[in-house]
Length: 207
Image (cartoon, rainbow, N blue to C red):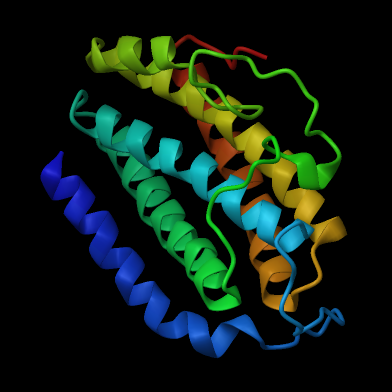
């Protein structure tokens, strides 16, 4: 696990080098280059998606240690690498904006969903796995671990897409809107892939 954490930290640090050049760029869609406020959609999305992404990275490293299937391991590595990079950018923007990485507002309050009841057991936002589900994944191996991971990650992506679409609609910083749209496109494609992988294993998404 220490090796995994070190890799994430190193990757995020590399990404942050480029963040300064990206943060205030104005996107072609007319996004603003102004510094957002602490209660803005831009800041809320950065905070919440960083938390959401961290769990996806954790799940991906868990399954890579519990299966020898190259397709699942490759997918898990790609998801871990992509989302660790994106998380580094989101946290880097908060630093550059001089904004806190935590908020007293509830998760997704920036989307008007701050009063939404939490699923509890560690699941802070839609799509996130519970602590019980994460612990169960750690105890599985082989095909069972693959199916559990693919089902959990499908749900996770669906929740992430919903949040990213909210940023595309509400965020004002151009590059953040672009990043959010990239998340929508990328995760939607991965959902299709995971659906096929589940079918190959005689399973299907949970919802």
